[in-house]
Image (tube, rainbow, N blue to C red):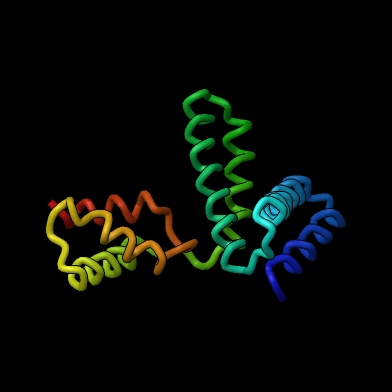
Length: 147
């Protein structure tokens, strides 16, 4: 079952179950997919859709921080539910230890030693962990190893 088929099936199920938050999140994802397909005149594959969902999770997490600063607990709870729903569609997220191992191997393979090599390390690691980790976490771990 492709991602688009899964999203459609989940949308129907959420409508039957009267799960408004899930329905809204799935509708938002489907709209983003359609928008990108129309804009770029392409058919998105499952990998592209995962990338798109990961981007939406990042946006929601950024919004979550703003809502917390503003003291909007109602929006914090709603946004957290939306993030949880989006995370169901992403591959299993990597732990910090797993990312640490990938970063160590990348630094060793590239021969990176200074902060000047940061870009090389990031461009080597990110395609391997796409959709399974937030880039800012990878960035933080890489900075720990490079001086």
